[in-house]
Image (cartoon, rainbow, N blue to C red; front, side, top):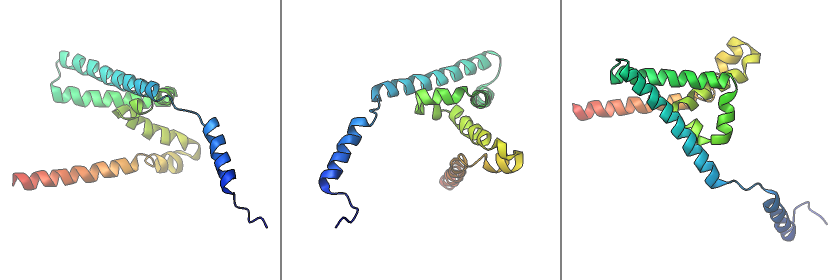
Amino acid sequence: MDDGKLKAPEIADYKTQVEQIKPQPKLLKNCVWAFATGGFICLLAQIIFNYLLASGLDKIQAGNSVSIIMIFLGALLTGLGVYDKIVEKAGAGAIVPITGFANAIVASAMEFKHEGYIFGVGSKIFSVVGPTLLFGFVFSVLIGLIKVFINA
C-alpha cells in the first residue's frame, strides 16, 4: 500500500540531484562587486560634497544638498531602468546607500503605474519602504526622548 510519502532513499536521491543542479554563488566576486559599487556611490557623493563646499556652501548645506542630489540620481536611474541593472550586479553595494532607498520608492511606484496614479502609484508607493520609514520614525523619536531625559 503506497501512502504517497517519499522513502528515505528517494529523499536522499532527490537531495543529491538538487545539490548537483543548484547554482553555486560566487561569494568573493559578489562581495568585490558590492564593495566596489558601494564605494563608487560614496566616492561620487564625496566629490559632489567637496564641490559644493568649494562653491561656498557650509557643511550642513552641502550635506543636505548631497542627500537630495543622490536621491534624485537614484530615482532618475531607476526610472530609466539603469539602477535595477546595477543592483543585479552589485547587490547590497547598490541597495544600502541612500540611492537604494530612492530606488525602492520609485520601483514600487513604477510597478503599479498601470493601475493609475491614485489607486496604483499613490496607494502602493510606500508598500516596500513603509516599514523602513515607520521604524526610522519610531527609533528617531525614542532616541530623541532618551537624549532629552539624559540632558534634563
